[in-house]
Image 1: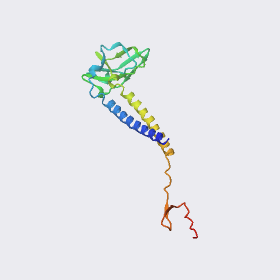
Image 2: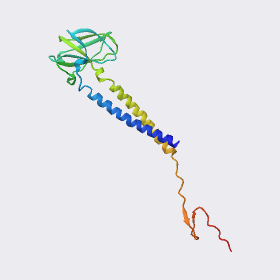
Image 3: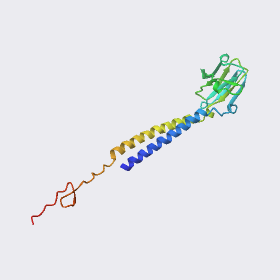
Image 4: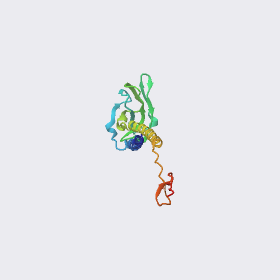
Length: 195
């Protein structure tokens, strides 16, 4: 049982270390995923005018961009699907690229034809931003769950190790008797005969 407890501790400790490294990697990958992206490669739709009916996939996140000759305050947008607006205004200059500025995200919960309207523009584009990010967030979440499970295994292993550790037998104590021989302290000295 003692070796099982130590192996459980080793497996838990190794799991925690691996999951920590994986979480750090995915967190770093998520934070740098936008730095080297050519967003022109991720344009899904380029629309002339301010209205369009576009098929949007519920598994993909979309962002609307307009030409940089406009400002966020003068442009309004709506994205309707079955009577509900799925547009979320988000003017973040960090994601602006080339001659395009971000004006907001499409938070679509359902796949289908969405009616997109952008006011005061001659054209706009819709960019797929989730494919660029990849699955780093999901992997980071999974590795974090793995860290928690490994930590639980490690704690169980440490508890088992503490309760199953063998106690070392007491060290025997020897004493030299009057005849010059060593004997255990528990032994009685030999009886001397009356010869």
